[in-house]
Length: 314
Image (cartoon, rainbow, N blue to C red; front, side, top):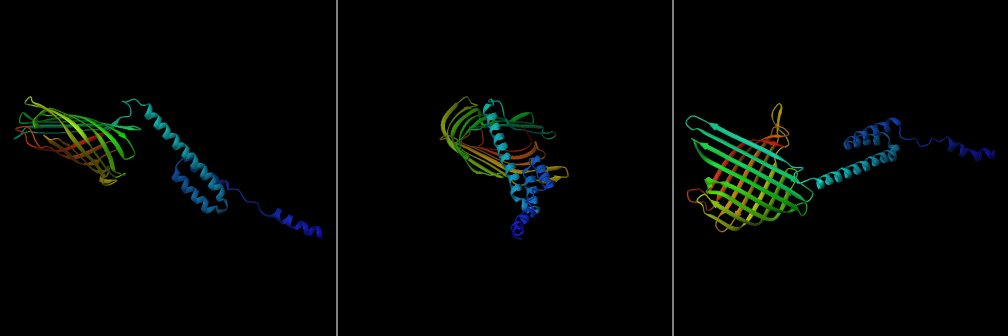
């Protein structure tokens, strides 16, 4: 009787069910989700597994933690590979940007032809960003040219921090109807990204400048000046449906650059509205104001230009 009494607890312990492992179908479901590599899918499947298998939370969490660790390692490896590729790239590699063109023609009481074209290129690096801009406007009215403007600019940025940067600027302009055959400007200074969000961006910059102007009458002048600039972009909506098969993303943006010296203050203001037709093709409506406080004799201080163009991103 005593032996039987002593063995009863051992028999009861042996008869108690052992902790069951995670059911094979549940494990297979988690493994299939992990195989997709999609974090949202894995998270959703793991949440269901936790709810339906509360006794196996430790094993489920171990699988999930292993997946998260692998994802972090992959992300780090991709970041390092991308950074290495940028560092090894030559100056002419990794450029992107957009080109735009617009035109008009009329006949009858007034015979006119107008063309406008712009190219903007940018290259983003680890420490440096590079921006190149080219623009041309041409118009003939009743057999006579009344607009002929060309602009080229190169502007590098050195990133001091996520928001603070040092800029440089070299710019050439030609506008005979504003009274100058060539105008050169060079500047350098500091810039700051006041707002750097996904939908709203605002950057300002300022610094000393040097400007030289060659007038159409043969005279020339150069002076020390100051430059102040502003760049603003605002994505108004994610998707604005225009037709059944065409979507548009409305974006409003503008820029303002003022070069101030003792002889002449120049201000360039550009405001635009864009509608995205496809991933690469965009329509843009822009309004430009160009102001010179002391234009040559026979020229006016303010020019305005409204453009409607097609933009192709690359």
